Length: 57
Image (cartoon, rainbow, N blue to C red; front, side, top):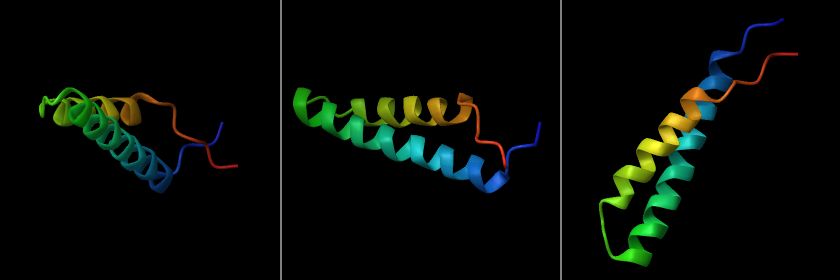
């Protein structure tokens, strides 16, 4: 099985952070509680880090 590419892994983590930031901002605006932003970033980073990275074909 081929090893994942570092660039793909980096893109995956960045995508997780971006999605977490968007969700964090949306929930923060909806609830009026600003601490949802760092929580969204943390969840996005964790999801991007634990997801199985794409393998090079």
